[in-house]
Image (cartoon, rainbow, N blue to C red; front, side, top):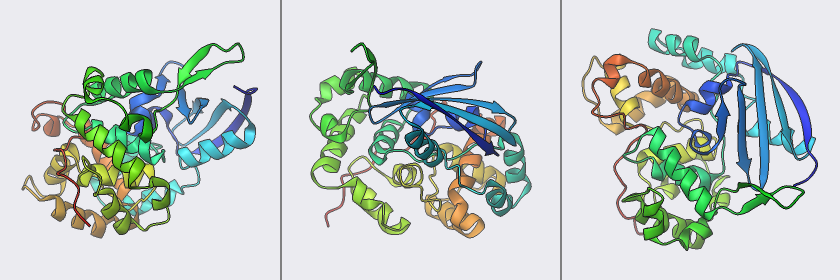
Length: 314
């Protein structure tokens, strides 16, 4: 590890706790201390420490890591600090439900993460809840991540494992990490992303084409593909729909009537357009805290989706 640097970044409409807790990749492997409002996470082979102070409207982020330029780029990109949240809120605050969600969770940001990291986290999320997802992801990191050492050659953390590393893992070992039936999908998706699909080369693609490419990955269905597009590539048109989002939208926008995933996608695109992804995050987090939604779903299965079928032949 190199010498540590510290920078302070002023932020508006930013709230670390909600951003961390709201079912994004960092939710599943970073460490957050609510008493000090401090987040510690790994990116590549670097450790980043982030402390927030202030209100939901105005505050500061104090970041510590290897070099000021690295920290500035990492924090600004990861937490989308260049997003004009007042403009985004104006665009998505189309009704009383959304206005209430924004008021309660003002400052909750979407994050942009490594695409493979995002893919693995959300493949694991299928038929799962946040606590179990976090346990599985952390077990996989502990078993397959590379050691990150300090200046005394002492291991202080482990990196997020690459797709190549995961492709060589055995299904049995992955099941011992708690992956269950997802072990097969993790291994096959890792092999596909290592041997067939270069995730980095997808960054230049527009959202519709990107999603089609992601749907070719075995184990990736509609919701997971949109999660990767939104939180792995920053495509704000993406609108992941899990049981929480689906049920919340049916209650709030369709008087409880059942709707198909395609109908909800069309509704979201028409209503929130280029910022549908932000609308989704606020719908999800508001829905997770609504009694009438939680009582209508059997079991707190967060961000769930049935496993996707085998990827299509081109």
